Length: 561
Image 1 (cartoon, one colour):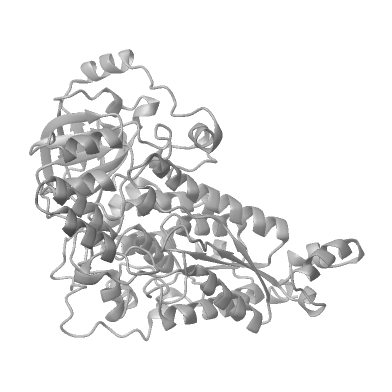
Image 2 (cartoon, helix red, strand yellow):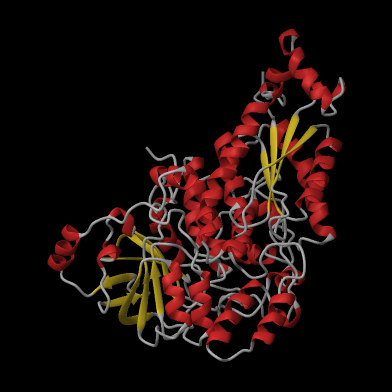
């Protein structure tokens, strides 16, 4: 028999519904709409992240229905199920933000649980807000069943080119006396006009683009507005395409390779994407059993320029990139330049090079995506830094506009809230390095995003005058001279725990270093005298996560032995 003959498109579902002993299973499924005919079809799980918790996901129920219709048309039997989402934008700056990164693990675990328990033969996952996406893909990698990811799509911008980051920065503008409360209210009420994920090249759009470059989404799934005919069509096509994967036996393990992750990293850099992509790609690689390290980002970043002039560091929004063709022309440009691996398999069943063969270039005269001879930055904006403050590494997002070197005096805070208060009331000024610690994966717990402090710094006009370092992380909307993921974190006795008010700190993006100007003897002395902070809580999900989670340098995953 040939390899093709050995493929069983009902490898998993037949164990659940075939035979005399499974009559009770069939009885249960008849109640949710199965017919006799359906029991002989491959079952396709549709993992929906629909929720009215956030505008990012409020429309995904309709997208799930479209995806299910596509799978059914192609001869499958679709089964829609839900997983959770939480909103970073809503919980930002509060204790609730501790649950944001944790939700990535909950999403991955819940999809794994449903698909494995119910015996689905194929899977389509649909993600909106930024933790949905890596959570969905982590589950796809773990389960290793024919799978496709669908991005819920980007939001349309508000009037005057506004988005959610505009609101965070407006808060800083009010405290600096540059904006009135009435002006803030006007920004607040117009910045988010409807469904879809954040409008710039923040984490959601960064991860959607990375996933497409990895080969797990259909063409331009990452570059479609949430409310568009293209997105609805993308969902129907995904439902049809997953049936093709089921019939051919193509699984994520056939698609996810070291080279496909290198393609993802390349796209994130070329688009000027989020620091969170580092954390999430490390986590996905872990579940895919692919060796990926922080040093891979440095290696690839040395040869890949930033070409897209997108927010937060640039001026354009995702909807504007969509109007000139999305990311496909950029991928074709990178492929032709030898910066993408064209032989990587994708969910179309074809290679990346084949998928891009007929893609036309961007229209003449557009200035959103630049040519190689006129880059935004000639190498990566994502700098992996090492030094006596970060022996295991830290991740900086430095576009070049802030400069590449910063030396300043430490202003030390044990939480995001206390740092934000000092920034807003003017106690942080030019030449300061804001140090926010005990916000790492274990110490937070949950590794909160520092969009409120970075937004306040930008809003007060200090973006190139104040640096911020943290063992927490940043929103994709953060910009300025910022360094996150400092590892080891303070809660585990990392050197960031012993920085004192007034210590001089040097950050250098060219030498890839971050150091506190102390002798090794003084650092060791302080570490010997250091005592851990009491845990934030000893009960529930946060406590469980803190006990299990790895270092940010390893992706903050929860199943490392």
